[in-house]
Image 1: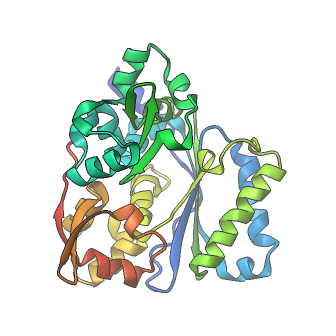
Image 2: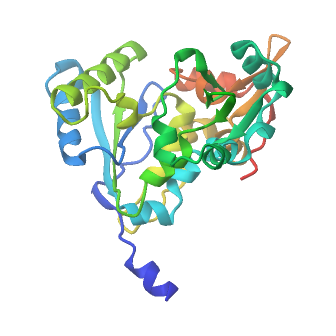
Length: 316
């Protein structure tokens, strides 16, 4: 029976096979993938039109990979769970996962003492509030009741502080019936130009009717925001036509770090355990690497990574 189930899992449709690493530290790889709520074909067309209709974008961006990953394939590989590994851990375990620095920032934001309030996981909140994951996801709170730290989000609902409220619904939306379209662009654009590109894509999606104007674009499509996130995206979404994940060495920023002497084991730890301590100019501080490296070039990100001295290990 297991053989039948495995045999029935659809393989990715690779429209444009990945051409390999760039080998050029001045070039960035930008992953864009469409979330299940979107009309994949329609969104792809609008995104490509933004690039094609602008001479600067057209000359500075090339498509180096295009694939459709079937929902059952995504589920069988635990792609979404692996992508949100740390968020999933905290959504399940709750307050015990917060570091002392995260607790301090939480206390400062809400003007409370950590030990005096009820901070719970998203899954515990579903039981306690007796609501569905969708209801929790859509539950509106004021900006003052929303808190973000180290890639994790907290919603204050009544007297409850709920960690990563979005994870239960996010995992539920990504089912065997929801395919994911993935595009990989290689570009020389600088950060300001990339910001303009993404803004134009968001505008095109709304004006083209591909997404609800009231829906935040981040809920409809994802794009790579840092060199480290490029590795995370590549590790989850780069496949060949047989459904085999491409080696991390094929990911451009991984290849760059390896050439600079960073071992693959360390690279994997950085991706999986992004809350780290770094030492800069004799000062030790805790950072969340995906935020800390946001917008950096490969060279800038490498120098920051070289200062990492300790990890907070993921336990999932």
